[in-house]
Length: 251
Image (cartoon, rainbow, N blue to C red; front, side):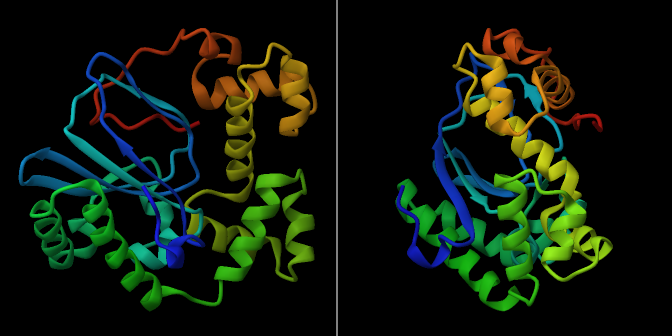
């Protein structure tokens, strides 16, 4: 699915999914917030906001005719949904709870459309409207902080000094706009880097490339966020699934 150019600075990716009830749903730790449209019938669907996940969660499989996930870049959700993103952490909320009648009208509009591309176009229009109305002076600060914490091992205090803000201000803005404290955001990014390299047989090398002190540090962090050690996850030995209504426990 092709994303409109104007949204590329704000949207990390778009995924068209058709879940299979025979497979468990694995939701990885994720610092991003997503807008998800789920089609359950010919003209029946809803929109849900999935907040940042502080740790992995595992649910029984389900089947849906269509599921479109628009995953926002960390920091983009605050202007879109109009509330502190920390309130969405480890939650999935109906968009109607945040947008009210506007969300209801959007759901009705999307439910009358056929084909994922046309549905995505309708979602993009709604996102662009919110972003134009909600962008503020913190955007540049957040982008710089997210980039550093995603790609380097720079300490939060050092990062704040380099960005000419206090560490407390950076932490407050980051938690409000991203939904997670900077240190936990960095931890999630490292674990996701390990997941990206999980096919490698050399765990010590994966740990080094992800920014860990050593392999034992990586294993402890991974187990805390994923519920199992890296080797067990790679082998498919996953934690037991939980009902969808049950949120993940705090790390």
